[in-house]
Image (cartoon, rainbow, N blue to C red; front, side):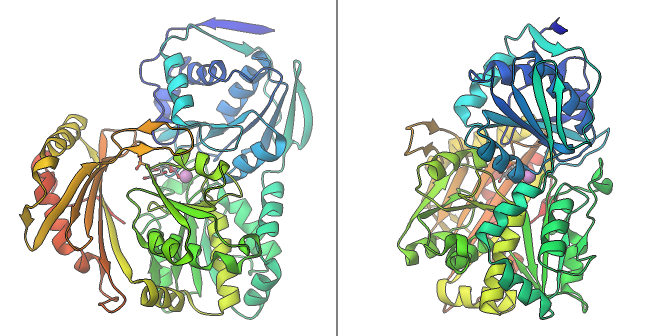
Length: 542
Ligand code: VG1
Ligand code: CO
């Protein structure tokens, strides 16, 4: 029995950097979740009769919203939904399933690195038929629909059994519960030389993968432990929990601190890695050596040809604007194009679809390739392992050689979290006004060369995305970038990205905080961070 439920629109359902993210309590407001899902369905013209992919990162509310989405999909004429067992699918696995199923798209229930639980965050992302996050043209249409919606459609039926593999019916619609790991693991086997990685591990190479109680646990156990032979227990925090064990599943030096400590300690394994809530990010730490995500992207680009899936070389690379220029130097050496896009994976999709780039990445610990249309945490870990297995060098050695050839882009990101939204907007507005006056000004020993606001012109479809970050470039190639986060759920988060290049002949082994101290001081002086936010130090430094 299809019910049409009358509702009034919610004014706050504008998707951010990566879908709609709100407190669980907000999603629990009567009809709130349904209103957003119906808006997605209404904005997708090809939905009726199509296949849809559905899954989430297992956080609090995941199972409930999966049931709602299934009943709404049935009421909206979807022919088939492929849903991960237990309602689980990592973001890259969902992207892959969309592509191999010929699906019209997929709903991914995740707030990624944001914490989970009844008082924490939930999120809904929509990915389109290429497997990638909905581009702005689609998220704009979804948002417009949320402002006008007056009803949603839902089938009145009992809940489905999400834990039984195979097909069930929901009205006219077929629901297929699939193994969330199988297709993804098979894809990884086509890209990487599992035999060589297995031999490396068999020779005593040790690793630790911290799944942070999030969705990647089952994937990492299947691939790293079962297929590649890492001893049981190499994957820690491997069971997805609704509240991620109380932590933030954000793979950085702050929230993955336990892994960092372990990797710097006397019993460190050769290789350490962590992933985020929905499995699309990766953090890589060698024994005694942290790899900044921007450096990781550059190393992967420089060495990708060592893995079978990339032996033909790279067509090009892309990075988000705030990501360091380390990968640009590799692209130059390889003689391939390097694109600079706004923050968020949705901007890479067109470049990947057009065959212009093979590899992409972000400073926030996201890297990926044209194998799916999302960033992919385990993929990056496997590419690292494949590279190490071929080169038979420790992570630190690979990084030292890389810097010795390309130089080092010292890099740090300062996050000021949960600041007052009005103060954050004022800071940005004031800085925007100041930009034209900055060139020529001195801040300590640093002289500003140029300053602008980044706008992206998509070379494949001509679309333009304005206001994607404020940039201040200094003489000598250093820079500071400011932007407001689009994934937070309370107040505003100011991100300040700080970068300085050191040539191969320079000092390549400074502490980043030291190497960037003058720039960080300039970053504060230019934007008046302390004055606007009342904060004297960032909350999170990564
Ligand atoms: C953050 C990161 C960005 C990433 C986005 C989604 O966005 O900075 O690089 O693409 O999260 O990643 P923002 O707007 O807060 O800076 V995920 O793993 O949360 O889906
Ligand atoms: Co994520």
